[in-house]
Length: 308
Image 1: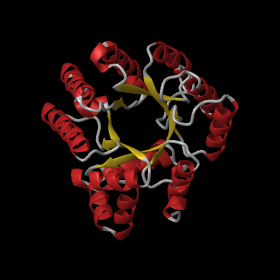
Image 2 (image 1 turned 135 degrees about the horizontal axis):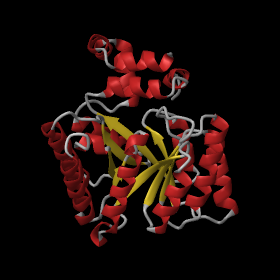
Image 3 (image 1 turned 120 degrees about the horizontal axis):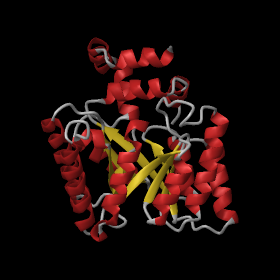
């Protein structure tokens, strides 16, 4: 019921306009989304970098409905890569294939992402493109494309994938990605998926995360552990210490505006931390969809509004 409610809210133009003008809406957007313009996210990135943390920038949006929208999305990411290089920012980019036009014209989407990865690989120093994971209908196509991109010698190490620990297939997918040295961002996953393909219990999702996490940490490829779960973070740091895994051989990742105190604490203790910073005009649907994906986030976000 809550999921359906938040999906409905995400589609309401009237509520969106009201939220974007309201004080609480502005507070939400400024805390969890770095504004609507490129300069907004660059400013947020500079601030995060100054605190000793790296960044992954994501222009909010997915499932574009025409080729012009897809081309505009790709052009913005090209601009971001140029700005990151010009301003010497410690940042890379994250994108969704449907934002690049996968549902409109698969060849267009593949060409646009290929161009972005090629650009990142040709930069000095080289940059990196994370291809985000979407719902299960896109899983195989997304992974196949990441494999294809990474097999091009000039792109090696410059493109990575995302795995979700609640997907039953993720251990097999991790094995395939690791066999080619492809960098992985590991998250728990928040889309609504059926029991036959995804774990439903929190304990099962967490156990899967920890198993995958340990495999990634021992793989000698640089990966990202995306979680705000303090228990899992403690397990990761303890495992790294016990197994003599270097602190600079992987990174933790967290969302912009969530647990900034924990982010800074980890950096102070010598661990690497990357902050995922979203920006763009789609901030209201972004927040509503996140709540629809996991309604328990209502309390989680409310608590974090009161944190530093």
